[in-house]
Image 1: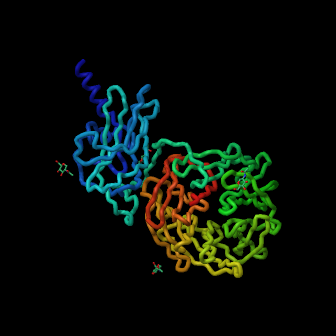
Image 2: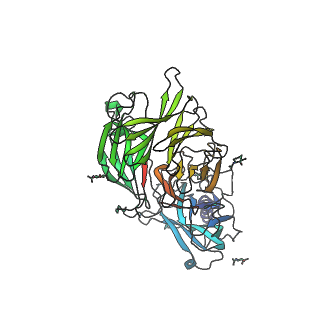
Image 3: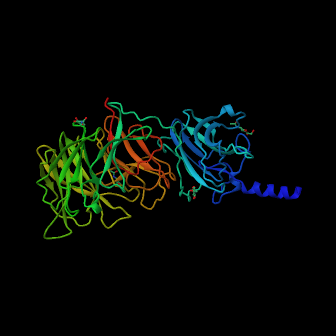
Length: 529
Ligand SMILES: *[C@@H]1O[C@H](CO)[C@@H](O)[C@H](O)[C@H]1NC(C)=O
Ligand SMILES: *[C@@H]1O[C@H](CO)[C@@H](O)[C@H](O)[C@H]1NC(C)=O
Ligand SMILES: *[C@@H]1O[C@H](CO)[C@@H](O)[C@H](O)[C@H]1NC(C)=O
Ligand SMILES: *[C@@H]1O[C@H](CO)[C@@H](O)[C@H](O)[C@H]1NC(C)=O
Protein backbone atom coordinates (compact mmCIF):
# COMPACT_ATOMS: atom_id res chain seq x y z
CA UNK A 1 0.00 0.00 0.00
CA UNK A 2 2.76 2.35 0.92
CA UNK A 3 4.56 1.61 -2.36
CA UNK A 4 1.42 2.23 -4.36
CA UNK A 5 0.93 5.65 -2.72
CA UNK A 6 4.55 6.53 -3.36
CA UNK A 7 4.22 5.60 -7.03
CA UNK A 8 1.01 7.59 -7.40
CA UNK A 9 2.66 10.56 -5.77
CA UNK A 10 5.60 10.31 -8.09
CA UNK A 11 3.35 10.26 -11.14
CA UNK A 12 1.41 13.29 -9.92
CA UNK A 13 4.64 15.01 -9.06
CA UNK A 14 6.05 14.69 -12.54
CA UNK A 15 2.76 15.39 -14.28
CA UNK A 16 1.87 18.54 -12.32
CA UNK A 17 3.52 21.55 -13.78
CA UNK A 18 2.16 24.97 -13.65
CA UNK A 19 3.74 28.21 -14.68
CA UNK A 20 6.53 29.31 -17.01
CA UNK A 21 7.84 32.79 -17.74
CA UNK A 22 8.27 33.15 -21.50
CA UNK A 23 9.34 36.76 -21.92
CA UNK A 24 11.62 37.94 -20.47
CA UNK A 25 12.62 34.32 -20.39
CA UNK A 26 12.93 32.60 -17.04
CA UNK A 27 16.15 31.40 -15.45
CA UNK A 28 17.14 27.90 -16.31
CA UNK A 29 15.46 25.72 -18.87
CA UNK A 30 12.10 26.31 -20.45
CA UNK A 31 9.92 23.94 -22.43
CA UNK A 32 6.29 24.88 -22.87
CA UNK A 33 5.58 22.53 -25.73
CA UNK A 34 3.43 20.28 -23.53
CA UNK A 35 1.36 20.65 -20.40
CA UNK A 36 3.05 19.23 -17.38
CA UNK A 37 6.52 20.36 -18.40
CA UNK A 38 8.80 20.02 -15.43
CA UNK A 39 10.51 23.30 -16.35
CA UNK A 40 7.29 25.04 -15.29
CA UNK A 41 7.16 23.36 -11.89
CA UNK A 42 9.05 25.30 -9.24
CA UNK A 43 8.21 25.96 -5.64
CA UNK A 44 9.71 28.08 -2.90
CA UNK A 45 10.32 31.76 -2.24
CA UNK A 46 11.68 33.77 -3.95
CA UNK A 47 12.38 32.09 -7.27
CA UNK A 48 11.41 28.46 -7.06
CA UNK A 49 14.85 27.40 -5.89
CA UNK A 50 16.90 28.60 -8.86
CA UNK A 51 20.03 30.64 -8.18
CA UNK A 52 20.34 34.05 -9.87
CA UNK A 53 21.87 34.16 -13.34
CA UNK A 54 23.48 37.06 -15.17
CA UNK A 55 20.80 39.44 -16.52
CA UNK A 56 19.98 38.71 -20.16
CA UNK A 57 17.38 41.41 -20.67
CA UNK A 58 17.45 45.17 -20.60
CA UNK A 59 14.32 47.00 -19.54
CA UNK A 60 13.81 50.74 -19.48
CA UNK A 61 13.17 52.30 -16.10
CA UNK A 62 9.76 53.94 -15.79
CA UNK A 63 8.56 52.53 -19.11
CA UNK A 64 6.00 49.91 -20.05
CA UNK A 65 7.13 46.35 -20.66
CA UNK A 66 5.24 43.32 -21.91
CA UNK A 67 5.45 40.26 -19.72
CA UNK A 68 4.41 36.98 -21.27
CA UNK A 69 3.95 33.75 -19.37
CA UNK A 70 2.20 30.45 -19.65
CA UNK A 71 -0.12 28.79 -17.22
CA UNK A 72 1.04 25.31 -18.03
CA UNK A 73 -1.51 23.54 -15.83
CA UNK A 74 -4.69 24.94 -14.29
CA UNK A 75 -5.49 24.55 -10.61
CA UNK A 76 -8.65 26.60 -10.29
CA UNK A 77 -10.21 26.27 -6.86
CA UNK A 78 -14.00 26.48 -6.99
CA UNK A 79 -15.19 28.93 -4.34
CA UNK A 80 -11.73 30.37 -3.68
CA UNK A 81 -10.18 31.23 -7.04
CA UNK A 82 -6.47 31.88 -7.05
CA UNK A 83 -4.40 34.30 -9.09
CA UNK A 84 -1.16 34.82 -10.93
CA UNK A 85 0.93 37.91 -10.35
CA UNK A 86 3.95 39.68 -11.75
CA UNK A 87 6.35 41.29 -9.31
CA UNK A 88 9.64 43.07 -9.36
CA UNK A 89 12.33 42.80 -6.71
CA UNK A 90 16.03 42.76 -5.92
CA UNK A 91 18.27 39.83 -6.63
CA UNK A 92 18.99 37.79 -3.44
CA UNK A 93 15.81 38.99 -1.72
CA UNK A 94 15.16 37.57 1.72
CA UNK A 95 11.57 38.59 2.34
CA UNK A 96 8.35 39.09 0.43
CA UNK A 97 8.09 42.75 1.45
CA UNK A 98 11.03 43.53 -0.86
CA UNK A 99 8.83 42.74 -3.87
CA UNK A 100 6.50 45.13 -5.69
CA UNK A 101 3.48 43.60 -7.40
CA UNK A 102 3.06 45.05 -10.90
CA UNK A 103 0.09 43.06 -12.25
CA UNK A 104 -2.41 40.50 -11.03
CA UNK A 105 -4.58 38.15 -13.11
CA UNK A 106 -7.25 36.04 -11.50
CA UNK A 107 -7.38 32.35 -12.22
CA UNK A 108 -9.98 31.12 -14.66
CA UNK A 109 -12.33 28.16 -14.40
CA UNK A 110 -11.54 26.03 -17.44
CA UNK A 111 -12.96 22.76 -16.04
CA UNK A 112 -9.75 20.92 -16.76
CA UNK A 113 -6.41 20.83 -15.05
CA UNK A 114 -4.53 19.69 -18.13
CA UNK A 115 -4.65 23.08 -19.81
CA UNK A 116 -2.13 25.56 -21.24
CA UNK A 117 -2.74 29.23 -21.81
CA UNK A 118 -0.40 32.11 -22.58
CA UNK A 119 -0.94 35.44 -20.88
CA UNK A 120 0.48 38.88 -21.65
CA UNK A 121 0.46 41.78 -19.21
CA UNK A 122 1.65 45.34 -19.64
CA UNK A 123 3.48 46.54 -16.56
CA UNK A 124 5.36 49.71 -15.78
CA UNK A 125 8.92 49.09 -14.72
CA UNK A 126 9.86 51.07 -11.57
CA UNK A 127 11.68 54.26 -12.39
CA UNK A 128 15.01 53.37 -10.77
CA UNK A 129 17.95 51.89 -12.64
CA UNK A 130 19.14 48.52 -11.37
CA UNK A 131 22.14 46.50 -12.51
CA UNK A 132 20.58 43.23 -11.54
CA UNK A 133 16.95 42.94 -10.53
CA UNK A 134 14.33 40.26 -10.96
CA UNK A 135 10.95 39.97 -12.65
CA UNK A 136 8.92 37.21 -11.13
CA UNK A 137 5.67 35.45 -11.94
CA UNK A 138 3.79 33.49 -9.28
CA UNK A 139 0.77 31.27 -9.41
CA UNK A 140 -1.03 31.02 -6.10
CA UNK A 141 -3.88 28.67 -6.92
CA UNK A 142 -5.45 28.46 -3.42
CA UNK A 143 -5.88 24.83 -4.35
CA UNK A 144 -5.81 22.21 -1.67
CA UNK A 145 -2.54 20.38 -2.05
CA UNK A 146 -0.86 23.00 -4.28
CA UNK A 147 1.85 25.37 -3.09
CA UNK A 148 2.61 28.65 -4.82
CA UNK A 149 4.63 28.28 -8.04
CA UNK A 150 7.47 30.65 -8.89
CA UNK A 151 9.54 31.66 -11.93
CA UNK A 152 12.08 34.46 -12.18
CA UNK A 153 13.94 36.30 -14.91
CA UNK A 154 17.12 38.28 -14.27
CA UNK A 155 16.96 41.76 -15.76
CA UNK A 156 19.01 44.89 -16.07
CA UNK A 157 16.99 48.11 -15.72
CA UNK A 158 18.46 51.19 -17.31
CA UNK A 159 17.18 54.73 -17.63
CA UNK A 160 19.03 55.21 -20.87
CA UNK A 161 18.09 52.60 -23.44
CA UNK A 162 15.70 54.85 -25.31
CA UNK A 163 17.72 55.07 -28.48
CA UNK A 164 18.49 51.41 -28.55
CA UNK A 165 14.85 50.56 -28.14
CA UNK A 166 12.22 51.78 -25.72
CA UNK A 167 11.30 48.19 -25.08
CA UNK A 168 14.41 46.23 -25.75
CA UNK A 169 13.00 43.00 -24.74
CA UNK A 170 14.79 40.28 -26.61
CA UNK A 171 13.52 36.78 -26.60
CA UNK A 172 16.51 34.59 -25.99
CA UNK A 173 15.34 32.24 -28.68
CA UNK A 174 15.32 34.49 -31.68
CA UNK A 175 14.00 31.67 -33.85
CA UNK A 176 10.80 31.50 -31.85
CA UNK A 177 9.10 34.76 -32.45
CA UNK A 178 5.78 33.01 -32.73
CA UNK A 179 4.39 33.97 -29.39
CA UNK A 180 0.77 33.02 -29.39
CA UNK A 181 -0.58 35.13 -26.60
CA UNK A 182 -4.03 34.92 -25.17
CA UNK A 183 -3.85 38.26 -23.52
CA UNK A 184 -5.95 38.70 -20.48
CA UNK A 185 -7.50 41.73 -18.91
CA UNK A 186 -4.85 42.49 -16.39
CA UNK A 187 -5.84 45.92 -15.28
CA UNK A 188 -8.89 47.15 -13.52
CA UNK A 189 -11.06 49.40 -15.61
CA UNK A 190 -12.20 52.77 -14.42
CA UNK A 191 -15.27 54.52 -15.70
CA UNK A 192 -14.48 56.33 -18.91
CA UNK A 193 -14.06 60.05 -18.63
CA UNK A 194 -15.91 62.13 -21.15
CA UNK A 195 -14.83 65.48 -19.86
CA UNK A 196 -15.09 68.40 -22.26
CA UNK A 197 -11.72 69.21 -23.72
CA UNK A 198 -10.18 65.88 -22.67
CA UNK A 199 -8.41 63.68 -25.18
CA UNK A 200 -10.66 61.03 -26.68
CA UNK A 201 -11.20 58.58 -29.53
CA UNK A 202 -14.37 57.98 -31.53
CA UNK A 203 -15.34 55.34 -34.07
CA UNK A 204 -18.11 53.25 -35.60
CA UNK A 205 -18.79 49.89 -34.02
CA UNK A 206 -19.81 47.35 -36.61
CA UNK A 207 -21.82 44.21 -35.98
CA UNK A 208 -21.82 41.82 -38.97
CA UNK A 209 -25.11 40.34 -37.77
CA UNK A 210 -26.79 43.74 -37.84
CA UNK A 211 -25.27 45.25 -40.96
CA UNK A 212 -27.93 47.95 -41.42
CA UNK A 213 -26.57 49.87 -38.49
CA UNK A 214 -23.40 51.03 -36.87
CA UNK A 215 -23.01 52.50 -33.41
CA UNK A 216 -21.02 55.65 -32.83
CA UNK A 217 -18.78 55.04 -29.83
CA UNK A 218 -16.31 56.89 -27.69
CA UNK A 219 -13.12 55.18 -26.54
CA UNK A 220 -11.34 56.20 -23.37
CA UNK A 221 -7.65 56.81 -24.14
CA UNK A 222 -6.38 55.37 -20.86
CA UNK A 223 -8.65 52.46 -20.10
CA UNK A 224 -9.67 51.63 -23.67
CA UNK A 225 -13.25 51.38 -22.45
CA UNK A 226 -15.97 51.93 -25.07
CA UNK A 227 -19.17 53.91 -24.52
CA UNK A 228 -22.04 53.90 -27.04
CA UNK A 229 -23.04 57.38 -28.06
CA UNK A 230 -25.55 56.95 -30.83
CA UNK A 231 -27.10 54.30 -33.06
CA UNK A 232 -26.63 55.23 -36.72
CA UNK A 233 -29.13 54.09 -39.32
CA UNK A 234 -26.50 53.18 -41.88
CA UNK A 235 -24.05 50.34 -42.21
CA UNK A 236 -20.49 50.04 -43.39
CA UNK A 237 -19.32 49.02 -46.86
CA UNK A 238 -22.46 47.61 -48.47
CA UNK A 239 -24.88 47.96 -45.59
CA UNK A 240 -27.45 45.21 -45.34
CA UNK A 241 -27.28 44.45 -49.05
CA UNK A 242 -28.88 41.06 -48.60
CA UNK A 243 -32.03 42.79 -47.35
CA UNK A 244 -31.79 45.40 -50.11
CA UNK A 245 -30.71 48.12 -47.67
CA UNK A 246 -27.52 49.57 -49.10
CA UNK A 247 -27.17 52.68 -46.95
CA UNK A 248 -23.55 52.70 -45.88
CA UNK A 249 -20.48 54.78 -45.30
CA UNK A 250 -17.31 53.74 -47.12
CA UNK A 251 -14.79 52.39 -44.63
CA UNK A 252 -11.48 54.22 -44.22
CA UNK A 253 -12.46 57.40 -46.09
CA UNK A 254 -12.63 59.95 -43.31
CA UNK A 255 -12.00 63.65 -42.96
CA UNK A 256 -11.94 65.41 -39.61
CA UNK A 257 -12.67 69.12 -39.32
CA UNK A 258 -11.18 70.13 -35.96
CA UNK A 259 -12.68 73.62 -36.13
CA UNK A 260 -16.24 72.56 -36.96
CA UNK A 261 -15.76 69.51 -34.71
CA UNK A 262 -17.21 67.25 -37.36
CA UNK A 263 -16.28 64.15 -39.31
CA UNK A 264 -16.99 63.66 -43.01
CA UNK A 265 -17.58 60.33 -44.72
CA UNK A 266 -18.47 59.20 -48.23
CA UNK A 267 -22.02 57.93 -48.09
CA UNK A 268 -23.92 55.50 -50.31
CA UNK A 269 -27.58 56.39 -49.79
CA UNK A 270 -29.37 53.64 -51.72
CA UNK A 271 -29.40 51.55 -54.85
CA UNK A 272 -27.01 49.18 -56.50
CA UNK A 273 -23.64 48.44 -54.97
CA UNK A 274 -22.23 49.13 -58.43
CA UNK A 275 -23.06 52.81 -57.94
CA UNK A 276 -20.23 54.77 -56.28
CA UNK A 277 -20.89 56.52 -52.97
CA UNK A 278 -21.76 60.01 -54.20
CA UNK A 279 -22.81 61.81 -51.07
CA UNK A 280 -21.03 63.54 -48.26
CA UNK A 281 -22.19 62.76 -44.76
CA UNK A 282 -21.11 64.96 -41.91
CA UNK A 283 -21.55 64.02 -38.28
CA UNK A 284 -20.78 65.76 -34.99
CA UNK A 285 -17.43 64.51 -33.77
CA UNK A 286 -18.31 64.11 -30.12
CA UNK A 287 -22.04 63.36 -30.38
CA UNK A 288 -22.56 61.46 -33.66
CA UNK A 289 -25.45 63.77 -34.72
CA UNK A 290 -25.95 63.78 -38.45
CA UNK A 291 -25.24 67.42 -39.29
CA UNK A 292 -25.42 67.28 -43.05
CA UNK A 293 -25.86 65.03 -46.06
CA UNK A 294 -25.21 66.42 -49.52
CA UNK A 295 -25.06 65.02 -53.00
CA UNK A 296 -21.83 65.69 -54.83
CA UNK A 297 -23.16 66.48 -58.31
CA UNK A 298 -19.71 66.98 -59.84
CA UNK A 299 -18.70 63.34 -59.35
CA UNK A 300 -19.12 61.75 -62.75
CA UNK A 301 -20.50 58.48 -61.46
CA UNK A 302 -17.44 56.37 -62.24
CA UNK A 303 -14.79 58.14 -60.18
CA UNK A 304 -15.03 57.37 -56.47
CA UNK A 305 -13.38 59.40 -53.75
CA UNK A 306 -10.72 57.15 -52.23
CA UNK A 307 -9.29 59.53 -49.67
CA UNK A 308 -10.02 62.75 -47.81
CA UNK A 309 -7.70 65.18 -46.05
CA UNK A 310 -8.85 68.24 -44.13
CA UNK A 311 -7.45 71.56 -45.41
CA UNK A 312 -9.42 74.35 -43.77
CA UNK A 313 -12.88 74.60 -42.18
CA UNK A 314 -15.52 72.79 -44.21
CA UNK A 315 -13.00 71.91 -46.98
CA UNK A 316 -11.26 68.65 -47.77
CA UNK A 317 -8.75 67.57 -50.36
CA UNK A 318 -9.85 64.43 -52.18
CA UNK A 319 -7.98 61.73 -54.05
CA UNK A 320 -9.47 59.72 -56.92
CA UNK A 321 -8.39 57.30 -59.60
CA UNK A 322 -9.80 58.35 -62.94
CA UNK A 323 -9.77 55.66 -65.59
CA UNK A 324 -8.84 56.72 -69.08
CA UNK A 325 -11.80 55.66 -71.17
CA UNK A 326 -9.72 54.86 -74.22
CA UNK A 327 -7.27 52.78 -72.17
CA UNK A 328 -9.09 50.66 -69.59
CA UNK A 329 -6.89 49.75 -66.63
CA UNK A 330 -4.93 53.00 -66.90
CA UNK A 331 -5.62 55.75 -64.39
CA UNK A 332 -4.95 59.40 -63.85
CA UNK A 333 -4.52 60.40 -60.21
CA UNK A 334 -6.82 63.30 -59.48
CA UNK A 335 -6.75 65.68 -56.54
CA UNK A 336 -9.86 67.71 -55.86
CA UNK A 337 -11.41 70.00 -53.31
CA UNK A 338 -14.66 69.05 -51.60
CA UNK A 339 -16.64 71.45 -49.47
CA UNK A 340 -19.39 70.54 -47.10
CA UNK A 341 -22.17 71.83 -49.33
CA UNK A 342 -21.28 69.03 -51.76
CA UNK A 343 -19.27 71.23 -54.12
CA UNK A 344 -16.32 69.45 -55.70
CA UNK A 345 -13.77 70.63 -58.21
CA UNK A 346 -10.65 69.13 -59.66
CA UNK A 347 -7.42 70.83 -58.60
CA UNK A 348 -4.71 68.79 -60.26
CA UNK A 349 -4.11 65.59 -62.13
CA UNK A 350 -1.10 63.50 -63.07
CA UNK A 351 -0.06 64.21 -66.69
CA UNK A 352 0.18 60.52 -67.58
CA UNK A 353 -1.70 57.42 -66.60
CA UNK A 354 -0.53 54.59 -64.37
CA UNK A 355 -1.52 50.94 -64.43
CA UNK A 356 0.60 49.39 -61.67
CA UNK A 357 0.82 51.68 -58.65
CA UNK A 358 -2.93 51.98 -58.45
CA UNK A 359 -3.44 50.62 -54.93
CA UNK A 360 -4.43 53.71 -52.95
CA UNK A 361 -3.37 53.51 -49.32
CA UNK A 362 -3.10 56.82 -47.53
CA UNK A 363 -2.83 60.58 -47.98
CA UNK A 364 -1.56 63.41 -45.79
CA UNK A 365 -1.57 67.16 -46.22
CA UNK A 366 1.54 68.96 -44.98
CA UNK A 367 0.08 72.34 -44.02
CA UNK A 368 3.45 74.02 -43.46
CA UNK A 369 4.70 73.22 -46.96
CA UNK A 370 1.36 73.08 -48.79
CA UNK A 371 2.19 69.60 -50.01
CA UNK A 372 -0.20 66.71 -50.38
CA UNK A 373 1.49 63.30 -50.21
CA UNK A 374 -0.25 60.16 -51.41
CA UNK A 375 0.97 56.63 -50.73
CA UNK A 376 0.29 54.25 -53.62
CA UNK A 377 1.03 50.54 -53.60
CA UNK A 378 2.04 48.35 -56.49
CA UNK A 379 -1.00 46.25 -57.37
CA UNK A 380 1.21 43.26 -58.24
CA UNK A 381 3.42 43.28 -55.13
CA UNK A 382 1.11 42.00 -52.44
CA UNK A 383 3.96 40.74 -50.27
CA UNK A 384 6.88 42.95 -51.25
CA UNK A 385 4.59 45.95 -50.78
CA UNK A 386 6.44 48.10 -53.28
CA UNK A 387 5.17 51.62 -52.93
CA UNK A 388 5.48 55.13 -54.25
CA UNK A 389 4.81 58.48 -52.78
CA UNK A 390 3.09 60.97 -55.08
CA UNK A 391 3.30 64.65 -54.25
CA UNK A 392 1.02 67.53 -55.24
CA UNK A 393 1.57 71.20 -54.45
CA UNK A 394 -1.66 72.71 -53.16
CA UNK A 395 -1.71 76.40 -52.31
CA UNK A 396 -4.64 78.82 -52.66
CA UNK A 397 -3.18 79.97 -55.99
CA UNK A 398 -1.31 76.93 -57.38
CA UNK A 399 -2.20 73.32 -57.70
CA UNK A 400 0.03 70.96 -59.56
CA UNK A 401 1.50 67.51 -59.62
CA UNK A 402 5.09 67.60 -58.45
CA UNK A 403 6.14 64.01 -59.16
CA UNK A 404 6.55 60.68 -57.46
CA UNK A 405 9.31 58.68 -55.85
CA UNK A 406 9.72 54.94 -55.51
CA UNK A 407 10.18 54.12 -51.81
CA UNK A 408 12.85 51.86 -50.37
CA UNK A 409 10.78 49.08 -48.83
CA UNK A 410 13.68 46.65 -48.43
CA UNK A 411 13.51 46.80 -44.62
CA UNK A 412 10.29 48.56 -43.70
CA UNK A 413 6.84 48.27 -45.26
CA UNK A 414 3.71 50.23 -44.29
CA UNK A 415 0.23 51.11 -45.46
CA UNK A 416 -0.41 54.53 -43.99
CA UNK A 417 1.46 57.77 -43.49
CA UNK A 418 1.34 60.77 -41.16
CA UNK A 419 2.98 64.16 -41.25
CA UNK A 420 4.59 65.92 -38.28
CA UNK A 421 4.17 69.55 -39.21
CA UNK A 422 6.74 70.87 -36.73
CA UNK A 423 9.60 69.04 -38.46
CA UNK A 424 7.97 68.33 -41.82
CA UNK A 425 8.69 64.61 -41.37
CA UNK A 426 6.50 62.00 -43.03
CA UNK A 427 6.16 59.14 -40.58
CA UNK A 428 4.76 55.63 -40.62
CA UNK A 429 4.40 52.70 -38.28
CA UNK A 430 5.96 49.62 -39.82
CA UNK A 431 6.00 45.95 -38.82
CA UNK A 432 9.15 45.53 -40.92
CA UNK A 433 8.64 43.14 -43.82
CA UNK A 434 5.47 41.32 -44.74
CA UNK A 435 7.19 38.02 -43.96
CA UNK A 436 7.82 38.98 -40.31
CA UNK A 437 5.14 37.02 -38.51
CA UNK A 438 5.29 38.36 -34.97
CA UNK A 439 7.14 41.56 -35.71
CA UNK A 440 8.74 44.29 -33.71
CA UNK A 441 7.09 47.53 -34.88
CA UNK A 442 9.11 50.62 -35.73
CA UNK A 443 8.45 54.28 -36.27
CA UNK A 444 10.03 55.15 -39.63
CA UNK A 445 10.60 58.32 -41.57
CA UNK A 446 9.87 58.47 -45.29
CA UNK A 447 11.81 60.91 -47.38
CA UNK A 448 9.58 61.88 -50.33
CA UNK A 449 12.54 63.29 -52.26
CA UNK A 450 15.05 60.44 -51.99
CA UNK A 451 12.56 57.65 -51.32
CA UNK A 452 14.65 56.60 -48.32
CA UNK A 453 12.89 54.99 -45.40
CA UNK A 454 14.77 55.16 -42.12
CA UNK A 455 14.03 53.75 -38.71
CA UNK A 456 13.58 56.36 -35.98
CA UNK A 457 12.85 54.01 -33.10
CA UNK A 458 11.43 50.65 -32.17
CA UNK A 459 7.91 50.97 -30.84
CA UNK A 460 7.15 47.43 -29.68
CA UNK A 461 9.21 44.36 -28.86
CA UNK A 462 8.99 41.35 -31.17
CA UNK A 463 6.82 38.40 -30.32
CA UNK A 464 3.92 40.22 -28.71
CA UNK A 465 1.87 41.72 -31.53
CA UNK A 466 0.25 40.42 -34.67
CA UNK A 467 1.46 41.59 -38.07
CA UNK A 468 -1.30 43.94 -39.09
CA UNK A 469 -1.16 46.88 -41.47
CA UNK A 470 -4.29 48.50 -40.02
CA UNK A 471 -4.15 50.21 -36.68
CA UNK A 472 -3.59 53.75 -37.86
CA UNK A 473 -5.84 56.36 -36.32
CA UNK A 474 -7.47 59.21 -38.25
CA UNK A 475 -5.98 62.53 -37.08
CA UNK A 476 -3.65 60.30 -35.10
CA UNK A 477 -0.72 62.68 -34.92
CA UNK A 478 -1.35 65.39 -32.34
CA UNK A 479 0.60 68.31 -33.81
CA UNK A 480 0.70 70.18 -30.50
CA UNK A 481 2.13 67.37 -28.35
CA UNK A 482 3.98 65.43 -31.06
CA UNK A 483 2.26 62.18 -30.09
CA UNK A 484 1.30 59.61 -32.68
CA UNK A 485 -1.50 57.17 -31.84
CA UNK A 486 -1.60 53.64 -33.17
CA UNK A 487 -3.65 50.54 -32.32
CA UNK A 488 -1.74 47.26 -31.96
CA UNK A 489 -3.28 43.79 -31.86
CA UNK A 490 -1.91 41.37 -29.29
CA UNK A 491 -1.05 38.21 -31.24
CA UNK A 492 -3.47 35.27 -31.24
CA UNK A 493 -5.89 36.97 -28.93
CA UNK A 494 -8.79 39.40 -29.02
CA UNK A 495 -6.83 42.08 -27.20
CA UNK A 496 -5.68 45.46 -28.50
CA UNK A 497 -3.75 48.36 -27.03
CA UNK A 498 -3.51 51.98 -28.11
CA UNK A 499 0.07 53.22 -28.20
CA UNK A 500 1.01 56.88 -27.79
CA UNK A 501 4.36 57.43 -29.42
CA UNK A 502 6.11 60.63 -28.43
CA UNK A 503 8.13 61.58 -31.49
CA UNK A 504 10.29 64.23 -29.81
CA UNK A 505 11.32 62.20 -26.77
CA UNK A 506 11.14 58.84 -28.60
CA UNK A 507 9.16 57.18 -25.84
CA UNK A 508 5.99 55.11 -25.89
CA UNK A 509 3.11 54.64 -23.50
CA UNK A 510 0.24 52.19 -23.86
CA UNK A 511 -3.42 52.18 -22.92
CA UNK A 512 -4.81 49.35 -20.89
CA UNK A 513 -5.67 46.22 -22.82
CA UNK A 514 -8.98 46.58 -24.65
CA UNK A 515 -10.77 45.21 -27.70
CA UNK A 516 -11.25 47.41 -30.74
CA UNK A 517 -11.51 44.80 -33.52
CA UNK A 518 -15.07 45.81 -34.45
CA UNK A 519 -14.49 49.57 -34.25
CA UNK A 520 -13.79 51.20 -37.60
CA UNK A 521 -12.44 54.61 -38.55
CA UNK A 522 -11.03 55.43 -35.15
CA UNK A 523 -10.56 59.18 -34.94
CA UNK A 524 -8.32 60.87 -32.41
CA UNK A 525 -9.48 64.08 -30.76
CA UNK A 526 -6.59 65.70 -28.93
CA UNK A 527 -7.05 67.43 -25.61
CA UNK A 528 -7.74 71.13 -25.99
CA UNK A 529 -5.03 73.05 -24.11
C1 LIG B 1 23.67 37.50 -4.75
O1 LIG B 1 24.16 36.38 -4.07
C2 LIG B 1 25.20 35.72 -4.77
C3 LIG B 1 25.53 34.44 -4.03
O2 LIG B 1 25.61 34.70 -2.65
C4 LIG B 1 26.39 36.66 -4.88
O3 LIG B 1 27.43 36.03 -5.62
C5 LIG B 1 25.97 37.92 -5.58
O4 LIG B 1 27.00 38.86 -5.62
C6 LIG B 1 24.76 38.54 -4.93
N1 LIG B 1 24.30 39.63 -5.76
C7 LIG B 1 24.01 40.84 -5.28
C8 LIG B 1 23.62 41.87 -6.28
O5 LIG B 1 24.04 41.07 -4.09
C1 LIG C 1 2.52 30.22 -26.15
O1 LIG C 1 3.52 30.93 -26.82
C2 LIG C 1 4.51 30.09 -27.38
C3 LIG C 1 5.60 30.94 -27.97
O2 LIG C 1 6.28 31.61 -26.99
C4 LIG C 1 3.91 29.21 -28.45
O3 LIG C 1 4.90 28.38 -29.00
C5 LIG C 1 2.81 28.38 -27.83
O4 LIG C 1 2.15 27.66 -28.83
C6 LIG C 1 1.81 29.27 -27.11
N1 LIG C 1 0.91 28.41 -26.39
C7 LIG C 1 -0.40 28.62 -26.35
C8 LIG C 1 -1.18 27.67 -25.51
O5 LIG C 1 -0.94 29.54 -26.91
C1 LIG D 1 -23.32 67.73 -32.08
O1 LIG D 1 -22.02 68.23 -32.37
C2 LIG D 1 -21.99 69.22 -33.39
C3 LIG D 1 -20.55 69.52 -33.68
O2 LIG D 1 -19.85 69.81 -32.51
C4 LIG D 1 -22.80 70.42 -32.96
O3 LIG D 1 -22.78 71.39 -33.99
C5 LIG D 1 -24.23 69.98 -32.69
O4 LIG D 1 -24.99 71.05 -32.20
C6 LIG D 1 -24.26 68.86 -31.67
N1 LIG D 1 -25.63 68.35 -31.58
C7 LIG D 1 -26.20 68.04 -30.44
C8 LIG D 1 -27.57 67.50 -30.53
O5 LIG D 1 -25.65 68.21 -29.36
C1 LIG E 1 19.37 57.32 -49.16
O1 LIG E 1 19.78 55.98 -49.17
C2 LIG E 1 20.88 55.75 -50.01
C3 LIG E 1 21.10 54.25 -50.11
O2 LIG E 1 20.89 53.63 -48.88
C4 LIG E 1 22.09 56.48 -49.46
O3 LIG E 1 23.19 56.27 -50.30
C5 LIG E 1 21.76 57.94 -49.41
O4 LIG E 1 22.82 58.64 -48.79
C6 LIG E 1 20.48 58.20 -48.65
N1 LIG E 1 20.14 59.57 -48.79
C7 LIG E 1 19.85 60.34 -47.76
C8 LIG E 1 19.51 61.75 -48.08
O5 LIG E 1 19.83 59.94 -46.60
